[in-house]
Image (cartoon, rainbow, N blue to C red):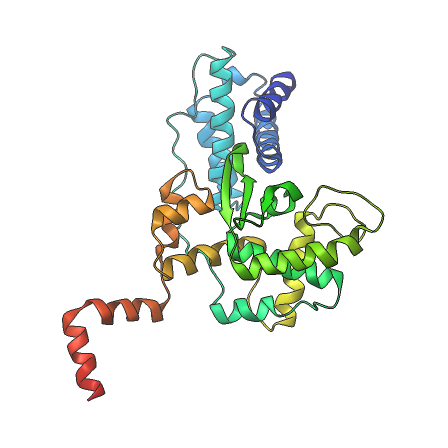
Length: 304
């Protein structure tokens, strides 16, 4: 089992160009599945059938694992067995007809425009760290970047002539994201003033660097956002992906088309983008009053 597992992980990295996060999650999920098989006395991958999988799913539910995590674990096992079939290690995929648990559809949370302004104004622009932090918050909100994409950015990927950034997202897929004038201005200030001070005598291709001159990591970006959310008095959990949610929500509220937002986010499927079609109550009311003829007449009467 271990030898086959190692070959599969190499396949994910070399042929599928899976991100390190995907590899990490698949590794954890598959090792958990293997441990379960050992407790059941199953020593061969060929012995796994739909009854074993049903027992595994029941075990996960008894352990209190949430539906989303169960679905992810099942997806990892399904992908693993597709690989085994392809390599002729097993003859059939026992997971092919096993359905994932139905997930509760949760709408993503997001910041209001006023909260975004407060967050952006929180960094101290008289310090190199403050200039860097203002630039990265501006960029997360202006572009909808994933935090992994943000911290992996190199200097050569930014084009100030077109206010564009070339990004390699999930599965090493390339896309171009845009940045508005405020984000471009904040980034320019950081690059001309803050970044040289943070680098000191060191050299780095990384766009965002820490106070020691090394590449900024995702965990640090999380702490930066938590710090400024507290300073800004924002009473909700603020994290990198929340700014991605905010980016998509504000674009759609402003009238952007779903396909445009899909392209900017780098979603492979439109269904991933459709969750952002929720709107705030004020926006929904505004659209209703402007679109429904009887609503307009009633609104005019009230004003009179």
